[in-house]
Image (cartoon, rainbow, N blue to C red):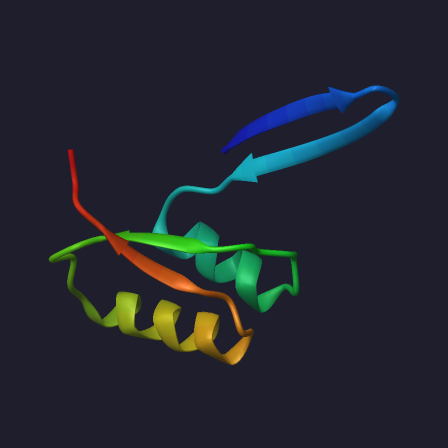
Length: 68
């Protein structure tokens, strides 16, 4: 997990990037605020379907992206 702390003239905001199917799933199911989920195009597996279903249930957008 990477945490960015940004100071906007006295207003401090944090942004976390959570990597890994299980970590993201746990964030969703523990009601942590999640803005968007990025999934590499072509990725497959049962746990991925569970993750996408949890994201949809929490109204979190899922975006499929090309890998590097």
